[in-house]
Amino acid sequence: MALVRRNVDTKNSSLMTDEYRAYSRMKTILPHFTVNHQETYAVGDIHTNTIEGFWALLKRGIVGQYHKVSVEYLQTYINEFAYRFNNRKNENVFEKTLYRAMGV
Image (cartoon, rainbow, N blue to C red; front, side):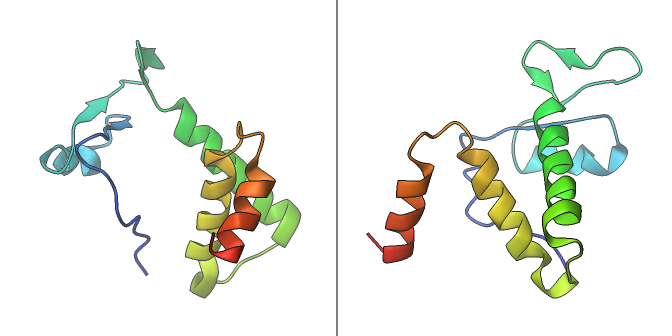
């Protein structure tokens, strides 16, 4: 099963990774910046701390809240935690969620 994020805005997005070679082809899709973790963990705004924090929250959420997940619904769990993460600073996230549920 491939986990795919649809509707990615490649014009206004960039990818920041470590130097793992499998990411090298991504530069054909969107701007790609790397950080050599053997030398440093950040070069200005280029770092992987945000995504590492997201994956840590997702893993803790699955283990602590759901205990285990099936492959069939894994993308749904990831979508839920991505929504939570992307709205973590939104004071009106509850209201936003209700409006979305009502289709408003």
